[in-house]
Length: 218
Ligand code: E4P
Image (cartoon, rainbow, N blue to C red; front, side, top):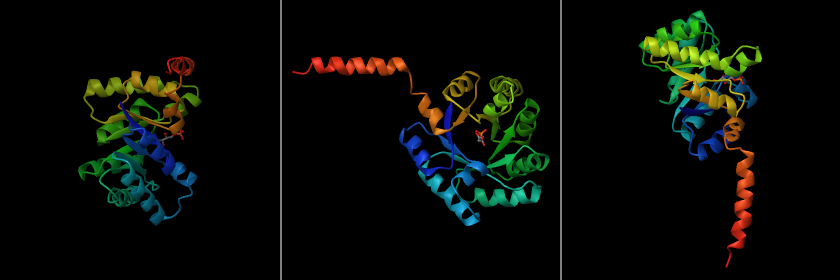
């Protein structure tokens, strides 16, 4: 399973990248707004900076919701760097645009996925990545992991090549369960990635080893 970081924060991207385990980055309009990035020029520059920092795919989301707007915006984003993947919402014009991008060799990430039916449509249109939102499904008292399992099954049975990118990750357990369910990629906030490191017995064990190591000093 590949690891993407789900942020537009350059310091956090650097910290995850320095760990040596980062395969890519995902962003969305909310994450860009959180960093205070405003205006087309600043947005383009920010994506360029991310692409130069990380050796992997970077999802850049369109703000338009009509076919012509999505295509125009997506082409501009894709021109920034070969690693840019155009992120398109699961709406009627979005599906149409994903098909257009596929035919024109522009890779896409279909976002805001909450059902298996949406996953089938996105794959039919040729999306490179599919983003089911685990955390938001769990928040609404449904089972996000069950959706990943269902999509994995459908894609395997049907031979769809769209990669399943588990998104809206809230904690380290989500990452482990997405891996079990067969997600191809997990996009996670930095805290969830670092949460994988933690186990109290590791801390207790290390403290004891360090204490005993002192006894071996000559
Ligand atoms: C990433 O591609 C998604 O936009 C993101 O994971 C959504 O996460 P949230 O539900 O925590 O906002």
